[in-house]
Picture 1: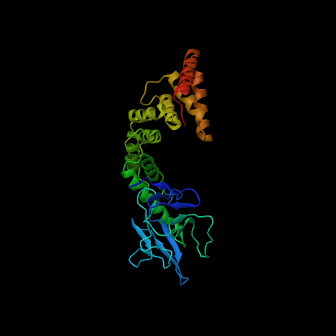
Picture 2 (picture 1 turned 90 degrees about the vertical axis):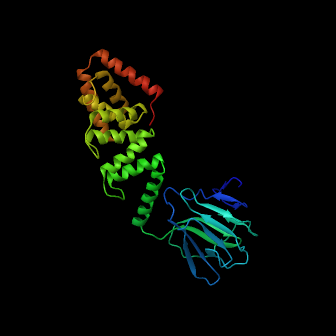
Picture 3 (picture 1 turned 45 degrees about the horizontal axis):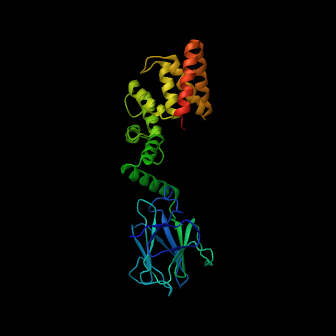
Length: 303
């Protein structure tokens, strides 16, 4: 099969093949959130939800969406919305399929939904819209999509599901479930998940408190330049939990964390920590801590 084109630009004619509908915010509105809006010659607005994996669009009565216009071929096109981007395929129709053509006039259609794209199958206009479900249903579908992608190993979705269970976004709060998903992402090297897993062990959220485990995961995140991991590791050194106290190393991580912290309260906490360390450290320890922070920042620091 020929390589898929990408329907991002206006006036895009779909070839005899497939194209990704990349303009559709697939991550924001997963499968089951789309619908086709059109009206046949009787003037009655019709809506067809794209709930199945394959929707056929043509003039023939055997198709999923029947368009009663002579410019539409008997087996004109199809749309597939699965776990990735939606895909539009023109099946070698006589008059072609256009995506967002700027030169066409659009028939009036009452449409309270957000129009994402407009198609012409031959000379027949069809709007690609969000479905009419309410925000709770949309959030539920979004969470289900995230969970499906997380189960398939997608790191970003594993982290997102972990945060959902941590803060109760669309699901009941569940510390153990949050830890499960943070661990999966952390083991794949995600610094944000490593930070959250360290925090879970430090405060006993979803797992028993374990200072050594907290330090382990904080350190992994901190070494990748994660500000939260650096803050957490600095705090463990400051309190002498899970590590042997070391003023120079403590100072290094506190300086690095403070340098990229945007939250005013967290920044204030770090400043208090830095001033407290400075009161008890020797000049040599201060110089060493500053040197280590500079070298780390020059070679590893990322946001």
